[in-house]
Image 1 (cartoon, rainbow, N blue to C red):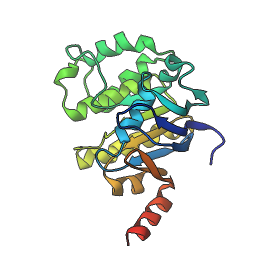
Image 2: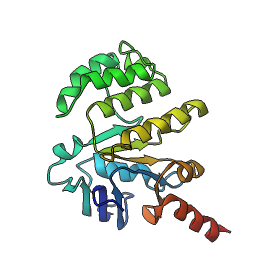
Image 3: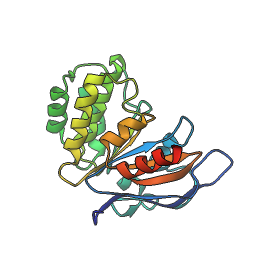
Amino acid sequence: MDDKTTLKFSHVTGKGKKFGLKDVSFSLPAGYLMGLAGKNGAGKTTLIDYIMNPNIRYSGTISIDGMDIRKDFTAAKDKIGFVSEENRFFETYSAAVNAKLLGRFYKQWDAKLFDTVLRETGVSGARTVGQMSRGERFKFQMAFAMAHRPVLYLLDEATAGMDPVFRIDFFKMLHKVIESGEASVLLTSHIQEELVQKTDYTGILEKGIMTKFGESVEVWKEKTNTNG
């Protein structure tokens, strides 16, 4: 494993009566793609929420690029590129206006890079966010994320309902963002076969518990042998 760790969970357990994670620990090294699998309700989106929502109470530690996110959540969030249907933008404004208004909150914002990626994916900067198709919205969010040069990309069920042809381009895009070895990707999906074929590491969640974590090939080999 790489010496540099992008994301690390250390014995993370949720506090309170609602559903939460239970003693989750894993490390995602820099420059790799990790898949997070599990049935609906297993805790995949919940794990993302623990990273993105500073109000969630938990014991243990979540670190990004070596920094405990609770010590400086604003600085931690600057290192994250979040892509999800739950991600909020100004729906009545264009992609370009959203970038201009929101990009200023990121230290390394690169407006030219945003324009370049958006153009390469075939989405017009004049397109109103609220009128975008699911595919256009994903491409816009990826362009926005890439433009502030995060070390961690969080993609929550990004491939759900995705066109098979674009899915190929999607994974090419992900490999492009990690090729420098500076950033990593955490991708949640219920399509297990996709994760074993396309990711370097896989974690499997069941009822908030990380039942398996390791190199994707080994995790799925073990899972197949167990089920068989």
